[in-house]
Length: 117
Length: 106
Image 1 (cartoon, each protein chain N blue to C red):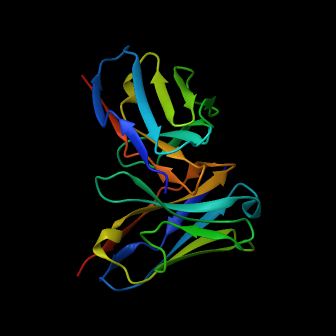
Image 2 (cartoon, each protein chain N blue to C red):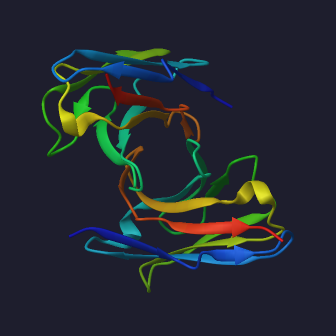
């Protein structure tokens, strides 16, 4: 079955860096755009970034532009999010999601990133 | 950027009620509108895509409609498992979510 499993979350100090990973299985990973979406504690969903099938095209939310970098390795069926210059407001559960046409399905279970001193 | 506004932010309803949630886009998004359901501690789940197409496995009591800037999600007869938070999402230009509508038990 189609499955996405995120990892790499944890506690990091403001200004620090973290790299999230998303392992995909059950589908041809290289055929799909992929996205990262986050949810701050008790808040709504915020789209963060997406990447094209080959990785040649990316897009970012204004809130993370210049600090976060999305990438993928189609040989490893993996999606990544490099997060630099982290701020308290980046504290959230980060989900990876497959983009089917223009919607997200499925989503991973999420990984929690906490930015705090 | 396209802003998505849902209303209401929360509602209380009883089992068997008909529930309607509205999502308004700050500009026309054609039919590039999707709906998700999220239960506490879980990842969101796709309900409706492209305004009105029901995702496989989703009960037929869920339906979506609209075009341009105004969209609705309707639950025809609310069931106990439907108490959750619902989000709309546009994909006409990058991606944006509405702020969510929490459906609570009355």
